[in-house]
Image 1 (cartoon, protein in one colour):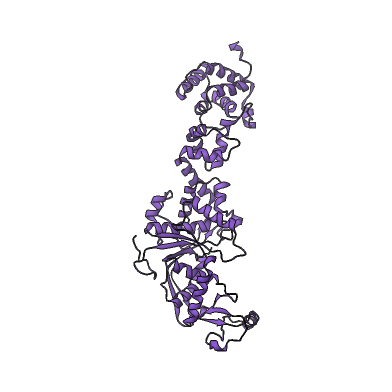
Image 2: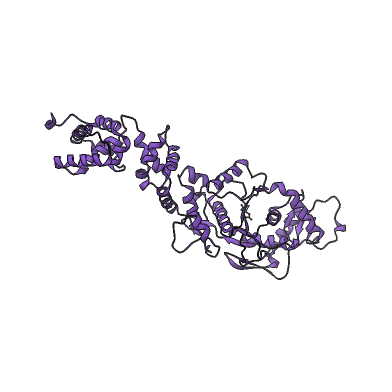
Length: 480
Ligand code: GLU
């Protein structure tokens, strides 16, 4: 393991440990996936560890299907944790233990202010137009004065003077005046830990050296430092990454078509390596390089080139990138993926053989499935309107001629078929297109398809001749 001495305050020389800590209240969204990716890459680049923590303390909103969707999405992207995931809720006792330690050392206190009292104070501050800050008289009270039988919460003693500075790997130096920090609750009156406490304790216990997450957590970092400092624990290095925005510049939301990672796979037919590459480039850059595969990304990734401003999600770019990866992908793998999107059980070997000519223009798996559908169509073919339009009487007569000619070909190869049809076109004094167009309509039911000789070879002799015969008209006069 190498170690990093990035700016920040993680113990110098410690091996890198990062973590992705999703709250399982919904699917794995694109922003979460990118956070996971950056943590994974940072750890891999430095030969460190990347851990997963499921922050399931919100019992009402955390669900099993969401947890399953998160693991599923991460494993699809190849971003599984290096160790068994940690479940935050299961660690409540440990969180409470740390709250107790902070109480014992005088860094936290039991506060007996009721919710009503707090609400009244908040309202008063509002009326007087001054910012509300918890200013509990229990902060410095003698615990012996505690009112018997009254519920209490545990609050951290936030510093009140001076300032707190974070040297953030993305945001640079960020300073907050300590008077802006409040004595927030770390343990509720029912003894359960708050999110703020749980995160700090878990990061510490998991040995996390670098906290890379969305910049919506930057304010939390200052509060979390209060707990860390209270325990005398090393501070991690922070990197708060700007959130992803939609094409219109507003924060990415469902309105922009922001989907779960599973929808990019299932509904949009995106390959994991394409989403990986796209998410990498969304907020991080290496010059003008667009196509960056996994190993290259590990070698190049650094926090210094994470942009400070939000990046914009662009579906067309993702689809273009996907097209690139489809062309690079193994044909048998694509055949299996496309077959799952086609009716019945298409012949995988045929699909794989056809893949090189099918995938050239496709941008997603559905386009591949659509493009390959003609291979498995049953006779009589359903012709598109355009294809029907091509099959004039004259064209049907030509098909009869083509049928005659090709019936005589025993060597059903690309070269022979090409030579044969070219010779026929020449004999008739026609461009090859005049033969290829009706032929394409008859063979595929469409007006666009892979090259016509490829189509003939893929369909094979018998099927090709049968499809041509099905559309051929009465033989032309000259042939009678
Ligand atoms: N569970 C938090 C979230 O899903 C992340 C907390 C963190 O990364 O510190 O937004």
